[in-house]
Length: 269
Image (cartoon, rainbow, N blue to C red):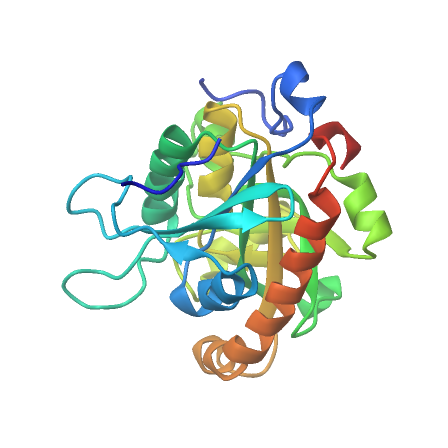
């Protein structure tokens, strides 16, 4: 027997990702957590005592992994894109993030998406290793299309679900996120990230935001800083050095946010 499966087009740049009005006014009952790496996912799977779905809701051959369970009054589904079948590494990046987000929303019909994960931070914007940010805006920094209007499409600016009470009551830092498919930062990427006014950069967030807006599911983004992009240490080295400790900080913040959401409507967040 299969375990329970939980209960458009581009809008103008910067429009918030929001649910239909009737959905915003009833308590959230189903949360979909989308996370990129197994290392990031495991603490949350353990925290919420989630079970792996061995009778997958996803297409045959897809490496995507789903965990599910009930926490307080919430049905929680956590998905991550799994491992590359050839190389055995986590399927990071925008393509896998968009695919698994689309498939999970279609199969699980969540009330709310939480995209949680690690990110690089900018000390020039006040970020430090271990800081956790509630994201106020997302955009791409590596989709350069220098043609009128296509340039705006490439940047893909979007606002997550409005969460002023979450930020205030949990005392979370707030900042903008820029997304691209490279761990390093080219001069062109740097210019775009600066234009996006981003405090942190990742490899998935804006892709998840695109799908959330298309399917009209409110989404929030929680990112923990593993490395300082404009610092002195090599990005890859610092990322790997801090991943385990920062993942623990991410786990704690995601748990706080989910505890806060329990029993509330989207419009109360």
